[in-house]
Image (tube, rainbow, N blue to C red; front, side):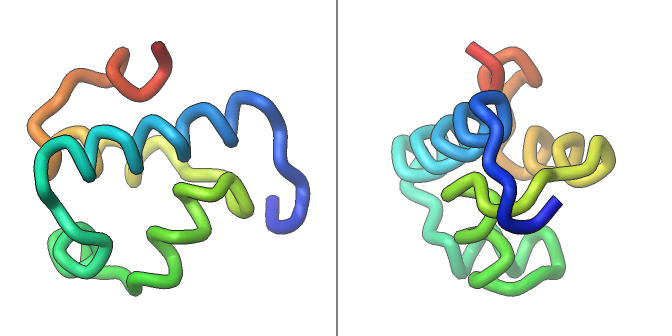
Length: 72
Protein backbone atom coordinates (compact mmCIF):
# COMPACT_ATOMS: atom_id res chain seq x y z
CA UNK A 1 0.00 0.00 0.00
CA UNK A 2 2.84 2.33 -0.78
CA UNK A 3 2.07 6.02 -1.12
CA UNK A 4 -1.38 5.93 0.43
CA UNK A 5 -1.45 6.93 4.06
CA UNK A 6 -4.56 6.24 6.08
CA UNK A 7 -5.15 7.54 9.57
CA UNK A 8 -4.82 4.03 11.02
CA UNK A 9 -1.52 3.37 9.23
CA UNK A 10 -0.17 6.74 10.36
CA UNK A 11 -1.26 6.15 13.96
CA UNK A 12 0.31 2.70 14.15
CA UNK A 13 3.52 4.03 12.64
CA UNK A 14 3.67 6.91 15.11
CA UNK A 15 3.07 4.50 17.97
CA UNK A 16 5.84 2.17 16.81
CA UNK A 17 8.22 5.10 16.79
CA UNK A 18 7.02 6.39 20.16
CA UNK A 19 7.41 3.01 21.85
CA UNK A 20 10.73 2.30 20.13
CA UNK A 21 12.18 5.62 21.26
CA UNK A 22 10.75 5.29 24.78
CA UNK A 23 12.49 1.92 25.09
CA UNK A 24 15.75 3.33 23.75
CA UNK A 25 15.77 1.14 20.64
CA UNK A 26 17.23 2.67 17.49
CA UNK A 27 15.78 2.12 14.04
CA UNK A 28 18.91 0.16 13.19
CA UNK A 29 18.42 -2.12 16.20
CA UNK A 30 14.75 -2.72 15.41
CA UNK A 31 15.55 -3.38 11.76
CA UNK A 32 18.22 -5.89 12.76
CA UNK A 33 15.85 -7.72 15.13
CA UNK A 34 13.19 -7.87 12.41
CA UNK A 35 15.67 -8.87 9.69
CA UNK A 36 14.77 -5.87 7.57
CA UNK A 37 16.26 -2.51 6.65
CA UNK A 38 16.33 0.75 8.55
CA UNK A 39 14.58 2.34 5.58
CA UNK A 40 11.73 -0.17 5.90
CA UNK A 41 11.30 0.71 9.58
CA UNK A 42 11.25 4.40 8.65
CA UNK A 43 8.56 3.75 6.03
CA UNK A 44 6.39 1.97 8.63
CA UNK A 45 6.91 4.71 11.21
CA UNK A 46 5.98 7.45 8.78
CA UNK A 47 2.94 5.58 7.50
CA UNK A 48 4.24 5.37 3.96
CA UNK A 49 3.66 1.62 3.79
CA UNK A 50 1.21 -0.65 5.55
CA UNK A 51 2.41 -3.33 7.94
CA UNK A 52 1.22 -6.90 7.65
CA UNK A 53 -0.06 -8.80 10.68
CA UNK A 54 2.98 -11.07 10.93
CA UNK A 55 5.30 -8.07 11.04
CA UNK A 56 3.15 -6.39 13.69
CA UNK A 57 3.40 -9.57 15.77
CA UNK A 58 7.18 -9.53 15.44
CA UNK A 59 7.39 -5.82 16.36
CA UNK A 60 5.28 -6.45 19.47
CA UNK A 61 7.57 -9.32 20.45
CA UNK A 62 10.80 -7.40 19.86
CA UNK A 63 9.59 -4.29 21.72
CA UNK A 64 8.01 -6.43 24.47
CA UNK A 65 4.65 -4.67 24.31
CA UNK A 66 1.03 -5.59 23.75
CA UNK A 67 -0.74 -5.15 20.42
CA UNK A 68 -3.03 -2.55 21.92
CA UNK A 69 0.00 -0.34 22.60
CA UNK A 70 0.25 0.19 18.85
CA UNK A 71 -3.43 1.00 18.38
CA UNK A 72 -4.15 3.29 21.35
